[in-house]
Length: 413
Image (tube, rainbow, N blue to C red):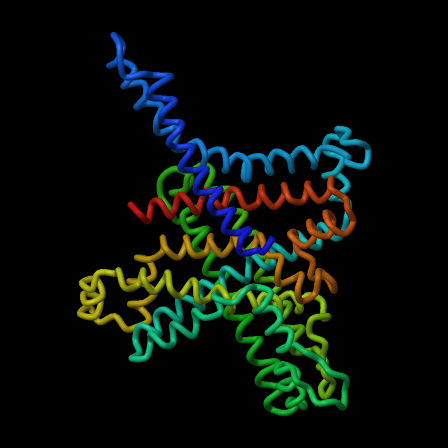
């Protein structure tokens, strides 16, 4: 059968089925179950009106249960059974096997790195682009260009960046932009500026940002007032955990600064960027940051436009400069939107699969949880561990999803 004819028949059957369902269910309700006649006509009409909304909701509830709730319970059951043993119940044995695999912990570690870098970088670049494009005459064109990567699929973007990171053997002409730039360095001032001073400045700026975050986390405990130094009972361990994580990030940043100064760069040799452990994760992250910056810019630009002009004018009259107006007047007023954008990108990062699959397939220490799950399910045919990793991803996504919905509803109010 021709595909077009098959699609037409499917549409006719689907639409016809919906119309038939609503017509026949109402006929059954009004004429058979609760007929609007006889001595109980009034009561039957009221009962029919109470049931009628559920008749309309039933198809949607059934579809949600079939395509959303059932897969969750089925995956949970698969994670507790051994398919090769006929579906025998094995408890948490699959989770134990997963926890003993180095690749799982590599995926957890990489996902944590993605969660730290990508939402922060995408939101920061989006906020910067929103603020700058609102101040120039050709801002609409600039916004369109920055938003354009959102129209590209993750796999398409990965193909583009594979060309950027492309490597040809030494002596051949390089078509990868990154290698072309790299080969232009030869230990001179340009190398010192771009390969040592610039990364050092970025790392120091990151360390200062983290120290500021630690200060904000500790301020209510050390200098605050009220119960537990102005923080709720559950906020105390969270603030302490943030402080410990921040201190660890500061240590890594400062250690990396030292490493940059003493590292012996292999000048003159083309580099296979995607095979360099640790740094190749950042090369993959650039793809997602490139895509998500447009999304962050659009949402934050709308939030910036919603700030009352009176507050900005009052700050100008008080003598505030542009940086003070931006960081002390505008950013605090859109902090709710910033949190929504941040958590939305965080959800995308937790489910990241396409970019890693298309560019490295989890090799060279770039494994992430979703790719690990795919490997277990469809390559190793290990449904127990694959389902267990799917449950881990769901448990990581769920609290952020609830938090995101809560903040979005609060913003709408």
